[in-house]
Length: 467
Image (tube, rainbow, N blue to C red; front, side, top):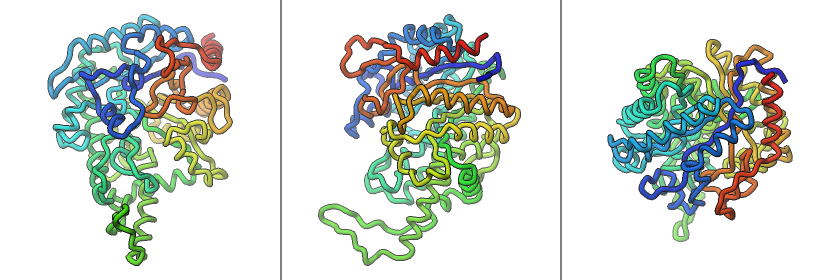
């Protein structure tokens, strides 16, 4: 494989998945895990206290980039009240990365936000969310300083929609905050219709705030989670997202739902053609706008309706970031339910398709020909769909090399993640362990970091491209 001399190999983690639970600084996911009966993060990997160990391990592999995230609930303990001690901690963490010869990449919102924001301000749907987020971003930028190479405002904004809309085959939301039980199709559509423009506005204003503090050298973007689909299908999904308003793309027809419980039976006599059309449009709307993570870059490139992406957000990025894990080529589209396995944390069954990463890199390079591309997350548990983690790593890096050979300006690649971590409420087992360093989260009170065979492989791959 051949990579440019300035290419950055790196690794990453996230605050909620690695920092120990602090009852004084609960975030929205702490409440969600408790309310939904999910696995709480507990002590996690105790990264708050042991960050130097993990940063040194990454540097020992030869990494030149280390991504971490800020716990908003720790930094802004109540609306407008910022904790200087927490900001100092994150500044010291960034300094540790720099001391080890790596560049820091900071994420401001990695699926979590303060409880006070949801309780008192409507969370991400609130009218003042964009400005509250921008104020938070400005405080963090001021506290961490100009040495931060890259800023990610929202981790996987494409996934945040699943806190407001359920896949039609599920009876609960994948992530917080979730809507009240029994919420209608119209309520879900209305919530997503508020969320998407709010995310664009919050990102745009946070980017402006960061640059106000640090200057134009600050590079700001996001990292949508991209699923690999065949080129023809991706084009159809993109066309649909661009040519229908949100209400049409999601739910063209609305019918009343029968309440199904022990006391009320479904009345099949009320099923009409409209009901089936409603189902069909719900399927297509979800696939074309929600499951299709391209909606973020369709908006930034000015292709979405202004109801979804306000004009001030068009062009508001300094690099193209993306996360890529799974995909399905045309001949395997009948295995679509494997993507559902991944969504449910059954990553050992997730569908592996490295070519999908190649297609995504080339597509986004065409859309944004003047900007560098950064693979902000790519990774695998010990195996996925009978593909070993080592083979997964080699094949995806081969796809990156092929894209670079075609002229795509890929600047960086982060393996997710440096250690085992708490995977969003899922039980800790091989299904959810993406770490280069294994940590027995449930049985080892010392949280010992043990290198995996893939850590050695990654080190060898990096070394082969540093000469």
